[in-house]
Amino acid sequence: MISLKDVTILTGIVDEERISTEKSELFCYSRDLGNSIPDELLKAYGMLGPDVVILPENTEEISAILSYAYENDIPVTTRGGGSWALGGALPMDGGIVIDMGKLNEIKTVNKGDGYVTVGAGLTWKRLMDNLVSHGLMVGAHPSSSVSATIGGFLATGGGAGTGVPQYGTVGDQVLSLTVVRADGNVIRTDPWSSWLFVGSEGTLGIITEATLKVFTLQKLQHYLFYFDSIESGTDVLQKLSEIRPYQLSFLDRGFLYLLNQAGEHCLVKELAVAVSISGSPEELKLKSEKIEKICAAGQQQPDYVARDEYENRFRIGLVFKCLGPSLFVQEIRVPLRFIGKVVKDISTLLKGYTWGIESLGSDTGSIVLSVMILGDEREEIEYLRTFSLSANFGALAAKYCGTVYGIGLHNAVAMRGIHHEGLDRMREMRLTLDKRNILNSGKTTYPRIPVLFVAMFMFMMKTVPFLVRFMLDTMKYVPIGLLRFGLSIVGGKIK
Ligand SMILES: Cc1cc2nc3c(=O)[nH]c(=O)nc-3n(C[C@H](O)[C@H](O)[C@H](O)COP(=O)(O)OP(=O)(O)OC[C@H]3O[C@@H](n4cnc5c(N)ncnc54)[C@H](O)[C@@H]3O)c2cc1C
Image (cartoon, rainbow, N blue to C red; front, side, top):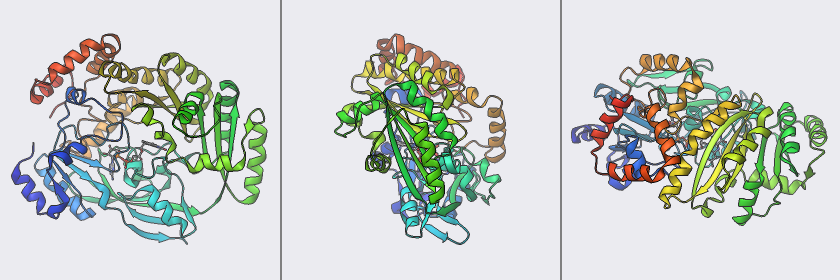
């Protein structure tokens, strides 16, 4: 809990109107776009929520805020667009939330040398729209580009999205980053040292500025094929990935059905495979011939339908949320060669649920599946049962040499399984750069929630949700300090 004196000092760093302790405002910053987490469950995780929200305008202000926070042991959580959907930007240990939204300047567009320098709080969509007027484009961008920030995509690793299969992940696009370290020191990285911060989820420093590669705007060509069986559709995915398309994705029958239910017009077949290519006219011709050959067993849709599917990429993911009204999303990254089996296993696991799969092309022969399960958080018992599926998805990904996609709060307990001894290196790195563990504490490198506790809770949610509901209701009356103390005894690391 930070004091009034702290708030007064922070108000000396940024203008008064860019700092808030307003209750309603703090509430908004204790949620993100992700799966609705019941209030009581957040409490069971030991989350304190923010004490103060600050909207700095530049690197210098962020440096001054962090110097003060570091000296006074105040936790700091960075927030971009809040679209990570895994609770990564939620302040577990209270303290300061830094909203990056005002660092949204496009500082340099250098067409000759092919780079841009931008504020980390700029959204990808705004950057891309601006670049079009210069005849340029970015290498990779997420399908959440309307709200996702440059810094957020970098901090979450940007391993899947449009452009990734052809140009590589977002880390491959970086020429330099400006980063404020936990103690307030400002550093500038080169392309190699930048990798330290790519995917570090706000635990090693706050990215305030990025210099990224840009490319001459290319002509895009889009294809959409429907397949009558999962096997015939998924077989083509691996072959398509070998031609390094600009975008590669598929939608399953469940997803197509839900799109229709939400008023979108599309055919409902077993699988829709969408592929986009970019390049010179000669490259396009060569790649088109290969695509048509690979997808010969599918039913090709007219050009305008394929283009529509691509142009809708920013909205399609959440279009049927209204049918829920809650949407529970689980993301896993699996090698393309296992897709058929993975989809079958998901069907078995989700028998009785209403769900669909959307996918995001990744690099290196893998693909990220976003499994969208409809639910209703007001039906508390059933929703808890749905929530418990997180554990099954982790296990399913591991069975096929994959991992959950993204860590945040939800998957923090899976860190050891994903990184093995790499997790120890990450912890060492954190100790070097942030000895006091103030940045995004309680998640990722040192998860607040003990692994054992989560495993036990997930199991109970599935088998005896009534009991879990009762426990959560009882927890309402337990002081949060006592709960956090309890968690630390079960195995969590509380400061
Ligand atoms: C509909 C939809 C589509 C999506 N599509 C994709 C996709 O194609 N590819 C993909 O990879 N993901 C995708 N996502 C997930 C998410 O949108 C992206 O990971 C996005 O890049 C997160 O950016 P953000 O600004 O919203 O970050 P936030 O959610 O605000 O933050 C995410 C994490 O990064 C940290 N962080 C944020 N900004 C900074 C910074 N400047 N410096 C240091 N740390 C920071 C936060 O502390 C937090 O841990 C999608 C999500 C949705 C809802």
